[in-house]
Image (cartoon, rainbow, N blue to C red; front, side, top):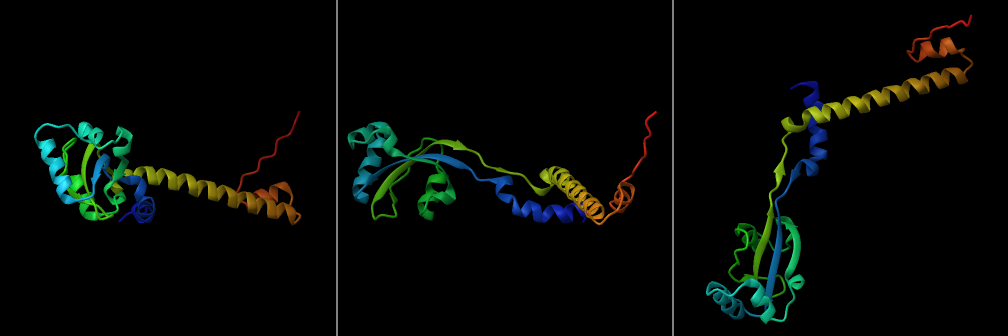
Length: 173
């Protein structure tokens, strides 16, 4: 394990949410009071009724069917989330039990694939960031040492030496 990997691993872990992005789906659903109603509606879908037509028949506008763009973990009911994330685009689910005691038909109208950048994928970026931060910290330390030395009465050359800086004298002609 190299020094970069030793330092990079905790940084990668802390920023994992930026490197591991879950799949998201634009989810629509139509809710029903009973499983029987949902099953009858699913049978209509199987016979060619569109999801939009079914929503209209239930007095819903298109925006009322949208749950938004969601990751699987953002759907409160794990079983319903799993079923929705197993569907191909635009396929209507079988009746799904909702968290409110009813049932729903759902579909994903768009799937945005997730991405997963490994430590190997990002370690060079982490190394550059870490190098920049360490250099900035070192510069601040040198400035503080220089300022403290000047405040304690050191001349410019002495303060520079204490801070690890080079000092050069220039004479004007």
